[in-house]
Image (spheres, rainbow, N blue to C red):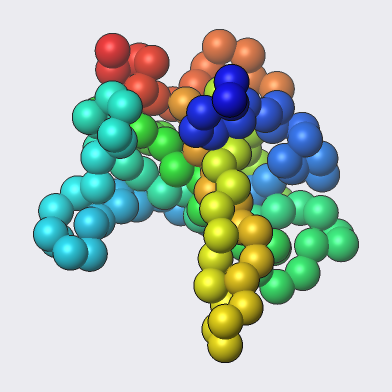
Length: 135
């Protein structure tokens, strides 16, 4: 099969109404208590907590995490005046579907979101530190 791993996807397909970042933190491996590293690059993994601006999003779909592999913690764009959250766009997005157990033998398809970098909406070429920058 030609498709292996995560599927590339445009930011606007995942977040057609935009996205707002709440914060970013290192991902820790719960078994080893050490920082999680990307299997492909060996770089530390970071999770950006994101609120989907889609007014129809509900429950778990309203708040998601987007993972970024980078040598240093990605820097979020500056706060926008009058907004309680930071509007963001992700570059180089990919989605990886997986099966999530939801209890009592029931499963559902869930998605893990990845990106190479994060930037302010419309800020071409002004992105945070990402795996590409560290390489």
